[in-house]
Length: 292
Ligand code: ADP
Ligand code: MG
Image (spheres, rainbow, N blue to C red):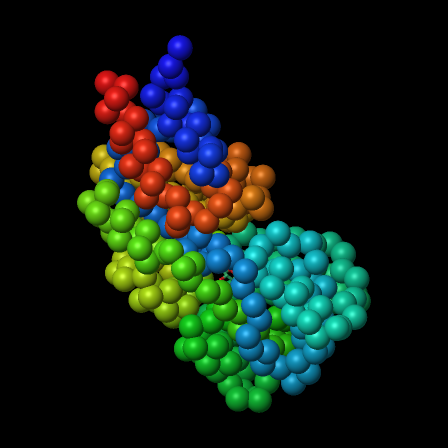
């Protein structure tokens, strides 16, 4: 007996590392006319590196940040831990770890509260003189990197610049998705405006929404759905669970996609999402045509 076309499509997708939940996902994929992309780990490789350390005591700052990030699943947390290893630092023990999706992490290190995360309005410029030249956040973001602020008991101690490469196939995937769906993908990110714009420029993306919290990303997609659009969303982190849950087709990126984002979504992309997303839409369209 031959396999029904929608199931055959699921099997072909699986061979390409795309695990789709069921046949309704294939039908929804075929109807997609709007695409939302997370930046970190989706359009970029998800292997970010620390490229700048701005602090009076750079090694001390990295060790402290790595301690606070010990329990983090986020790509930025891994980058900070890897920098501590590269510098061969002794990382102190941390307790009371809390991840704040889309914001950062906090933990107790040596009896003090350490936070590592996105710059808030208050510390964007930095109190004059706190780490040499003021405006470290501006400098780091101006270079296209993501600025992460490290504070101890509420006092800023330094800024890390973390950069991630755009995936090699991302620009052509963006072109293909634009052609297939009739609309350019939209970049939704929790990152700041400048690092987001740096990635968008390399991909020819014009619609970029930055500084979004996880629920803000979901709100954007819900508005599109109220307009009658069928939305494909791809994202990786814990922070993308709300986005993946509201999209018609929410795909969690990476074998390391967090359990939460996998559960919230309609499938998992085990390999480079940029290599597979346009092919998935084409495959789904062919399968639904045959099924009819
Ligand atoms: P994206 O939308 O690009 O995946 P997130 O929503 O995960 O980004 O994070 C938004 C911002 O919050 C990051 O750019 C960073 O400034 C901060 N952030 C989130 N998680 C962490 C973390 N574990 N360590 C440091 N900063 C973090
Ligand atoms: Mg993310």
